[in-house]
Image (spheres, rainbow, N blue to C red):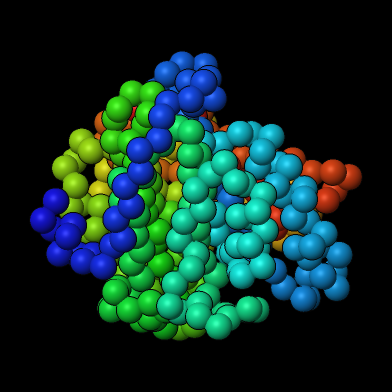
Length: 304
């Protein structure tokens, strides 16, 4: 682990001593299985309020959908200040990690940084360490940008112990750029950083990576990830057929009709090492055409 310490000297270390609960043991059908979700909840914007799809109108349904699928860990994307408060208040049985930091001091509205917090079920996992690094040439400087990115981008991570089995694994969550200049160059640099950081662990060490990659499965960014032995669990479970746009702009399956194209999946649950997914499902819940976000969420049942 010396390489990891050298890469992220500033990582915060949290040690807790939880006990195994009945809820943890019963959270999946068999001990050692748990559910991972990735959820781009869409930033809290005034322009969305004007269109009738703002956070104030969506948040209760967003929470309802997440709770319906009862994930044990969630990688969130596009979280702003008020959304972070709402999530903390709503999911009190989860650790909410990776939002606050010096780059957010004094900020009460849109900061130019949409963050990627983690939700981790307290009854199921012990936190061994958590931290953040920024996808830039200065990864220890909060809010830093490089390569023409559109807003600062980062990775939140947690090293976890499964209380039902005692096994360790690592959970990371990110949101890649839509760049100001050359998108592919920026994404390549960001993905190369993620791969290099993850490679500081042994090849068989279990890792989960979630996020909105703003990239199709056939993109160069995803090739870098899969060449590094990360498994795209949606393809592993469902095959390579394109399910269409997961960033659907609040249109759901009507995206294709409105845009004249099927679009691409850009949301991912990836695994590496001694870990295996048994399912990977797009969450397409809606109420009378009203969606919890402009992205479909995705979940995967994982066996460690």
